[in-house]
Length: 448
Image (cartoon, rainbow, N blue to C red; front, side, top):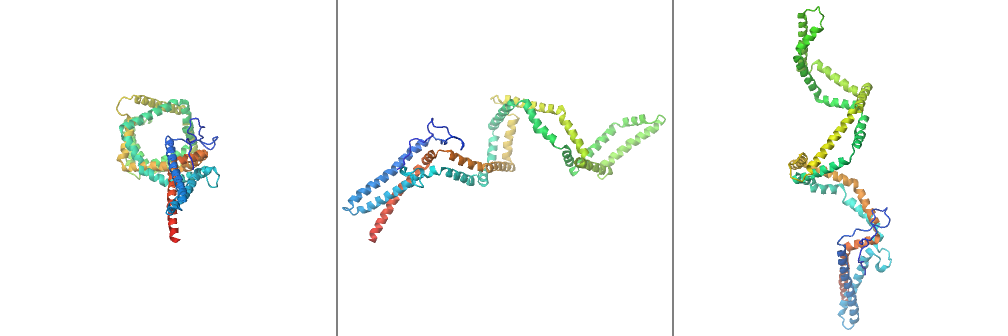
């Protein structure tokens, strides 16, 4: 009969430290749960029941074998006991062979769990990877959970939004507290300024002008410019006339100067009105052509490209850029520290902007079905993508973790989990074997 030791290796506080992977020295100790002792006691009790049943039918077989000659009807009992004993021994062998060599004899294809532990770990990892960590399974489960709606409901509660805002404030305050200003400045230089230096300015400006001119937006800018010019002309009409008079020769009569000034002002006004009123005015067409030539020059003219690159480098090299980034970082750091000090007080106070924004975000998601569906979809995609990227690593983790376990400790651990149920196989084998033996004995008598 297989026995179970009173303690599983690794349960003692003096046990060897557990390994974290195959590279660790020695086998890894399995984690012992608080109910392992309860399972061990129940397993021992069930083993005793199965063993006592086997011993009982063995004794019954011996007794009936000696008394059968005097009481022939005991042949039925003897046949039952004989077959039950065979069935019980066979199932004891089968159950015991899973975890150890029966009676310590190294019979082939016994001690299956400890001898094939690594193969079992690999198979288990592959099974989990192919049947649980698939995009379809994970997506369906996450979608059914509606995590976006749950998060929005949680966030919409004032106490939760306040708690999250305070945690965020303390976390950010601690993070900015350990960052040195020089390190942040170096990070800005490496991550932003250096990237701007590598990025060509002229194509970017060309793209910007294309966006501005798409759909005739630049014509709207021209209309604004025309209105400003008309306003300027109206407000400075007297100055223009005085300028014309001052620039004319001394011998030109004043009446002529006034006439020339009137012509200039009137001509400019008529031109501005005509251009503003006529979408197909030649000046507008020339304006379109000038903008197109400028965009093309930004894309293809080496001199224009080089000139914009130099302008960009001059701007980035200006001390004001570094000073601006320092001022921005100082302002951000000060605001975070100030906010953290405000929320440090546990006294009840009116919700601040961050709390209101978080709570408002939750309410918005709950009240907008389209946005709610998008949020749930984003969560499903993120989780499914993460699982899809990590599924092979999870399978490898399972196989390497099982491989690092001690073979005999693993066998005992698994026996603790399922051994009690396996004892019912022994009990059923004893009873079923006995019934089959009884039936065969009865059929034999009928055919005799």
